[in-house]
Amino acid sequence: EDLTVVAFDDIEMSRLIRPGLTTVHQPSFKKGYEAGRVLLGMLEGGQAEQIVMSAELTLRGSSAPPPGDGN
Image (cartoon, rainbow, N blue to C red; front, side):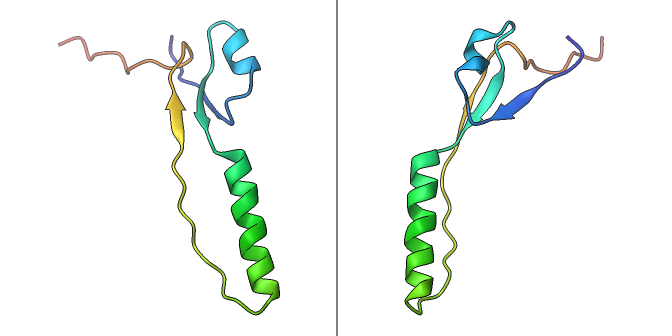
């Protein structure tokens, strides 16, 4: 109740434990694909790229809003 816990990668265990673990899901396959694509391009003389990908927050029982100040 006094602490919020958030983890990355949304592994299956985060859904099974109690309270459920709030997680940030990242597109793992897409990250690997883009990393490989950029690396191959750089090996062929291309420039490094900045790639921005979205992530998804899955709220579960390990997080809650902060308590009120009592006023």
